[in-house]
Length: 205
Length: 216
Image 1: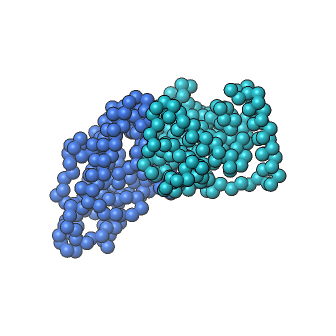
Image 2: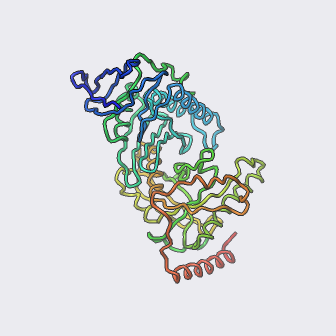
Image 3: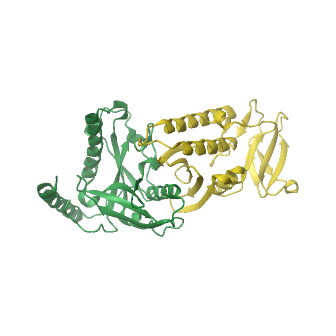
C-alpha cells in the first residue's frame, strides 16, 4: 500500500500536482488534490488496463474506465427515456432538465463519481442519489440550478446550491461536494496521459 | 366527509405503505421514491399516510395496504391499462409520529418550510391522513427543498412491518425482501393491553358510524 502525501511546494492556488511511480514502474500516476490533502491510500500493484481509481465513499474499489462509461451511458439512456414519456406520466422530465442532468452526469463521470440512483419529484427536476444506511448525498438538478444535500439519519449536514452558470468551472464544485460528503479533503487520481471523453453526448446518453 | 375527529395528537403514529413498483426501482426498494411528494396549488406538497387511531392493529394496517394496491390494479383494469408486470404489490408499512412531521418546521438546514401538519382527510378510507408541508413565499429552490423534506421524513421512519397479501402468495421473490430498515428503528407497540383494546373498540364504533351515515 502507498500513502500519497501532497507536495505543497507545487501548490498552485488550491490545487497541486504530485507524481509517483509505482513499484513495478509500469504506470506513472498524477494526483491532483486540495492543498491540505493527505493520505489517499492506493494499491500500487501494476495494472494492465486503463484503470481509474474511484474514490467511492466507504472504500476504494477499482473499476475500469470503460465500465464506468458504460454505467453512465445507461444512466443517460434512462434520462432520455424519462424525457420521451408523455406529460403527466410519473417519471416524465422536461427537456431542459434532461440537458442539465446529462451535463452534470458527464462531469460526474469525468471525476469518477460512482453512478447514482435516479428519481424525480416531478417533471421539473431529477435527483441523483448516493445514499446508504449512514450517509446520504443527493444532487437535485433543475433546468437552471443544482443543489446538493449531505445528511445522516440524525441531521442535515450540509446544503449547497449552484446556478448552472457556475458550471463554467465545475471542478471546484464537485471537489467541494465530494469533500463535504467525505468530511475530509479528497484526491482525484487519473492515469497519466489519459484524457476523458470531451463530448458529453457521446459519453452520457 | 362531515366528521371532524379533531387534531391528530403529536404522539400518535402514522403509517406510510410501501407498494411496488411506485416505491421501487426495478425490484429494489428505494426510500426516496417511497416518500414521493406531490405538488399542490397552495404552495405546499402532500403525501398520504394512515392514522393508527383508525388502523389500531398491525392486521388493519396491512389490510389498508392490500386494499390500496388492489384498488389501484382494479382502476387500471377498468381503464384497460393494466399490465401484469406493473401489477401493484403491497410490501409493508413504515411508521412515524405526527410530531416528526410537525417538527420539520425549524429543522436546522430546512429554513424553507413555513408550516407542516398532518390532517385527518377521509378519502374513502376512514384512516386516511394528508401530510402537508408548506413552503415560505419566495422560496428559490423548491425542488431541492423537496429532496430535503423527503430525506427528513425517511429519517423519521421506523420499520418495516412486512406483509404479503393473500393474492400475492405466489409472487416469488416477493419485492418486500428488499425493504430497507427504517432509520428510526423497529416498530414497537408501546401501548398497554388495555390501551390496545380501547383503541380497537373506539375504531369499531367510529368506523360503524362512518360506514352507516357518512360513507358515500
